[in-house]
Amino acid sequence: MNLMTQRIDPVKLLSDEQRRATPPVPKRVLIELTARCDFRCFFCASHTRPREKSDMPWWLYTRIVKELRQLGVEQLGVFFLGESFLCDWLPEAIRYAKRDCGYPHVFLTTNGRLATAERVRECMLAGLDSLKFGFNFSGPGQFHDVTRMKADEYHTVVNNIKDARWMRDYVEVSTGHRCGLCASSLLYDDKQRDRMEEVIGDILPYVDEHDWVPLYGYAGLPHSARHASAACEGGKQAPRKPLPCAGPFVEGHITCDGRLSACSLDHNPRYQMGNLRHMSFAEAWRSEPFQRLREAHLAKNVSGTACEKCIAY
Image (cartoon, rainbow, N blue to C red; front, side):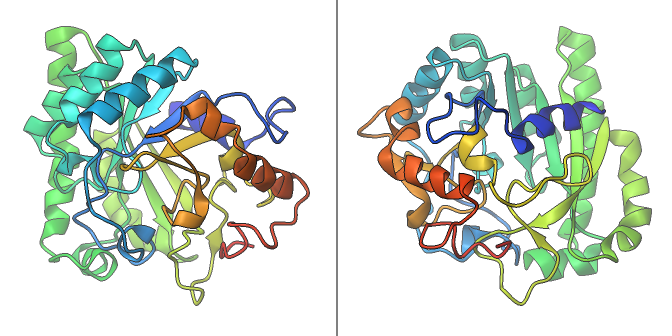
């Protein structure tokens, strides 16, 4: 089992202790530094749901991150639906989590366009433990079709992945700190792997790991789409049935305005289980709405719940 899968599998599979309406506080939480994104990918809810495209206030970030660590959270993802490299204080966010709060593992997923060598260097020097590129394109044409960006920007992403490797090695030699580099690719359909074979071969020498993942059931995904999976159904490394979805039980998802979301793939208000501006994470995690939603998942019947409209069900 590779390192990426070692961290993914526990999020996909429910233990007996987690399989209840009030599971323990999760060991892994994603926190959204910004709701902004430079891409408009067809499968992502980020651009299909109206909400203010703002950044999380620094005071709220530090308060929540400190509280989460005190509760025993060990893995902090400094991203959610937005693109974190749009946030000017991304390196400071990483540094605060690592040095001030003592998180064992701080990680980040990016679409790669703004992950320049200098920005990556700043994040690695701040203590970033793992950087993953979402690389989902067979070439400039598909890049444009998926993201609505100029086709030439595809080469920017590829070059940034390559630059990240030599920057990682430079930081490791200079400081002794080694940041893991990963890439993952979405399988839009059963032909996508073949389409991407050549370009994946181009980036493989520059990352430690690459994995294929299914096209997850984003709430913003058109119902005409095929091959969609539940948010935490898992890929070939951690296959599991859609219900119960593991996300509401094992992973926290916090939006830039401080809402605890039950879904890892959408910020729609129907998934909001608590406002962390006015309550603690522990209170929101064990709130009545969240308990009722988990009970429905355990009963394998999400009719009438926030998850009813998930394309995977």
